[in-house]
Picture 1 (cartoon, rainbow, N blue to C red):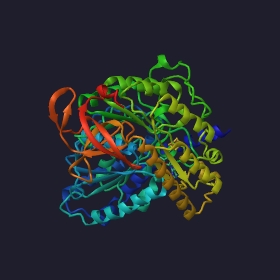
Picture 2 (picture 1 turned 135 degrees about the vertical axis):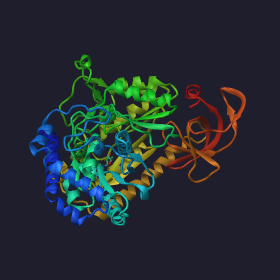
Picture 3 (picture 1 turned 90 degrees about the vertical axis):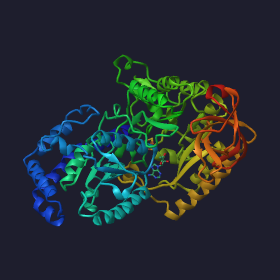
Picture 4 (picture 1 turned 180 degrees about the vertical axis):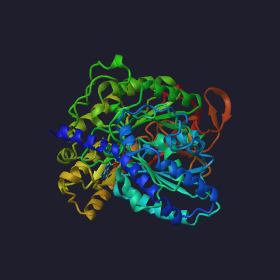
Amino acid sequence: MHSLQCVLQVQRSLMWGPMASVSWLSLRMCVAHSSLSSTTCPNPERQEVGARKDFSSRLATGPTLQHFLRSASAPQEKLSSEVEDPPPYLTMDELLGRQRKVYLETYGCQMNVNDTEIAWSILQKSGYLRTSNLQEADVILLVTCSIREKAEQTIWNRLHQLKALKTRRLRSRVPLRIGILGCMAERLKEEILNREKMVDVLAGPDAYRDLPRLLAVAESGQQAANVLLSLDETYADVIPVQTSPSATSAFVSIMRGCDNMCTYCIVPFTRGRERSRPVASILEEVRKLSDQGLKEVTLLGQNVNSFRDDSEVQFNNAVSTNLSRGFTTNYKTKQGGLRFAHLLDQVSRVDPEMRIRFTSPHPKDFPDEVLQLIHERDNICKQIHLPAQSGSSRVLEAMRRGYSREAYVELVHRIRESIPGVSLSSDFIAGFCGETEEDHIQTVSLLREVQYNMGFLFAYSMRQKTRAYHRLKDDVPEEVKLRRLEELITVFREEATKANQTSVGCTQLVLVEGLSKRSATDLCGRNDGNLKVIFPDAEMEDVNNPGLRVRAQPGDYVLVQITSASSQTLKGYVLCRTTLKDSSAYC
Ligand code: 5AD
Ligand code: SF4
C-alpha cells in the first residue's frame, strides 16, 4: 500500500508532462497580445521588431495545443546532439545562437554542475558563445536547486539583482534574456513566470535539449517553458563540456532521478524517475577523459549504487542483486540489467592511473560484491558516502529510509571490515517532523559511534508535494532545529578531528589540484578519502626518474607525510612524485 502510493506520487509528478503544453498555451496567449508586448517593451531596433512581428505571426498560425499534447504523450525520441531541424514556426537561423553570449550560473549539488556542462554543450552546438562576464551576457541562465527553502530564496534574491541588469540594458544591444533551469523550474513551473515577469525561459532537468528552441521563442519577447519530465532521458550522447580545461577531475553522470521517495525529499518530484545511462556510453566518456589526461572521475547520480542499465536485452533476465542486509526499498524490487558492481569494475579498468569515486549512494545498495571491488581495486577510492539522515530508528521510519539505526550501524561495521582504512561521510537532517530531544540525542550518539571523516548537516526544510508535507507536521520550532543543528555540527567536528588525526605520521597519496587558496607558497590536493591536503610547494624526487628534481603540477600524484589534521584539512610535507600504481604499497 505504502509503496503503491509512492509510485503514484512519482507518476503524478510525471503527469506534469502536459504542463509543458499549458506553458505553450500561455505562449500562444502572449502572441495574441503581441501588440501589447511591443508597446510595454518597445525595441529600438526596427529590424528586430520586424523580425519579431514576422515570428509572432508565424507562431500564431503555428502548432496548436493538440500538437503539443500529442508530442507530450508520444514516447520521447532520442534527439541527436547535433542541431535539430527547426519546428515549423521557426527558421533554422532563429534556432541558432548567432554568437549570442551565454552566462551560466550554477547553484546546488554536483549534479547541477554536470547539468550546467550538458546545457552548455547543447547551446555551444547551436552557435552560442560562453562568457564569464555577466555584463557582456546576452543570455543569463541559472541552474537552480530546490532541496531546501534557503536554496530557492537565494535564487529569488539573485533574480532581483538580474532584473536591475535587464532594465538598465542599453537599447543598442539585443535584449537580455534570463532563464531558470533545473529543479526550481520543475518545482514551481509557471509560478516563476507569473511572479517574475523578467524570466524568459524555464527548462526542467530533462528539457535541456530544448534550450535552443526555448531561447529562440524568447527572442521574440515571449516567455517559453518546457518542464516535461522524461522516463528515459540520460543525455547519454551529450558530452559535457568541462568548465575548467586544466581540471584534474571530472564528474560523469551515470543515472538520473530517484525512486526512493524519502518523505522529506523534493528530488523525485523535480528530477523524476530513476533511469540509468547505458554502460557503453559511460565507458566511452571515461576513456575520452583519460585520453585528455584527467586523473579522477566521480560517477554521479541521485542514487549511484542503484544503477541498473537495462538497455541491453541479454542482461535483463539476470538475477536481482541483493540489497544491503537489513535494508528495504519503498518500491517493488527491480530485476535484471547491468548493476553498479559491473559498471564500477569496467570504469576502474579504463585507466589504472585514474581515481574513481562515486556520489551520492544510498546505504541500501551496498551488496558484498561492491565492497569487495572497492577493497581490491587500487584506483577505486576507499571513500564511501553513507547518508544516514538520523540516528533514531523512529525518525528513520518517518523518513521512510528503509533501515533502522541498528541495520545502518551493522552496515558501517561490514564496510569497515571489508575495506580497512575506509573514509566515511554522511548527511544528516536536524529537526525532522516529530523529532524529539531523545531522537536528537540518538543522532548525536550515532555521530560519536561512527566518527565520520566528513559530514553534511542540514536543518529540516519542509517542501511542498513531499509525503512529509501531506502527512506529517513540521512541528520542531525553527530555533530548536538550529540549536540541534549546531550541536550536531560541534559533535561532528570533534569526531572528524579525532578520525582525521589517525592520519598524522602516515604517508598519503595526494592528487595535486593546484595552489592553495590561502597561500601562494602552498599546494593543495586530495587524499584517497577526498580530504583536502595542504603542503609547501617544494622540489622533490620523481620516483620514476631517479635523480630528477621536480615541482608538483596539477594532475601529479605525490606522496605527502601528514603532520597535522583538523576536522576538514590535513597538512604535511611532500616526499616525492609517484604514480597511483607505484604508491599502493605505501598507504
Ligand atoms: N530539508 C533538509 N535537508 C534535506 N535534504 C534533502 N531534503 C531535505 C529537506 N527537505 C538533505 C538530505 C540529503 C541531502 C542532499 O540534502 O540530507 O541527503
Ligand atoms: Fe531524496 Fe536521496 Fe531520498 Fe532520493 S534517496 S528521495 S534523492 S534523499
